[in-house]
Image: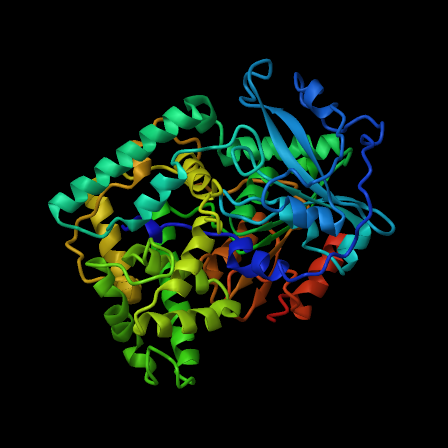
Length: 518
């Protein structure tokens, strides 16, 4: 399967951060630099006392990466928490987890940890996600960059900025024997670069298994008896794994845009592809109502028109103001980025019209948003961290026949992503060449005694299919809120039918008796 088709992305990349750039600063107060309240942490595992008992010194967020200035303006505070790199060797090397906090403005219940997904997405900006809601009154809202990600130290790094640009310009869809061999060679080189630049020890301990242990250290140093957590997309995997690891430490979990822990990786990718096809079809239907729609006024012809627009880019990139040009790979990435949310459909419509006129600027900007490339040409480490986490979290495909079958199924369920070059064969994904073994496997969660949790699932979510949320709610014995829409995640997007029961649950632990079917 082409590499650009295999990933989830977070609600941040689906538009929340873009919208956040337009927000006015809500608070200019200087953050305090006092340490956490001098109470003993609860639930400290043997041998980890020094990590759970460490003080937290809150400071300015100004030096905490791309979101730091925004967080500073909003009145957030930042800190770093030290954790073992390897929990089986707590006296060995350590990592530092970057966290952010918007202090509760009213009658405080405790802390609420929030993760935007990815994997690999920075979560520091999530400290502001509950602004203007009761959650901001009742909770210290805590964002965090998981180990290896963003401002946490050390961070996963595999490619330089120049190498990342060069990789995006390459054709990764050639399914001839020569093309497959070239793709696998690049995958080996990428894995080798990750091992050399990030270190084997970090790559071996950057997965979900370790992150949930870090989350519990954060709970401990914040002096919360139990965990209140809101997770989006891959963040639902973190929430589920935390419940499995620390079931007696759960107060409340909201899991929006669920991953099904029972699902095999190939099945997950195929279902995602089908979800993106449905989102493309919905976009095409909407686009057909505009005279400027490059896909025409007949949605049944949208796939053919789309392929006619993007397939010529395989041979030569489209013109852009940026000297890079728009590659075929970046065109597809930009389109997928916009399909995460209808709020980006206008940009996609304009981008396709511009491409029809010979200009790729808008689609390149959308692709840059997805790839974590800033205006100055520097990259966040979202892609490198994404690859490192998924390769250690899941079993890898090493059978070329299985990879070829997966590619065939992918093209069948997502014809808008089929460039017509399928051969029934496919290159092995880079995880097949990863230098450390995986630490996770598909499984059915077994969490006896877990308090009621709340799962939110959107009917036409392009990245995390609705049924996965239904299944996760059943597996965890939790309640379900179904939202009718075509977007990736919905909590705190302003949908009252969703937000009111979610907030009521997080504040008062009142679980909806029935699915409201918003």
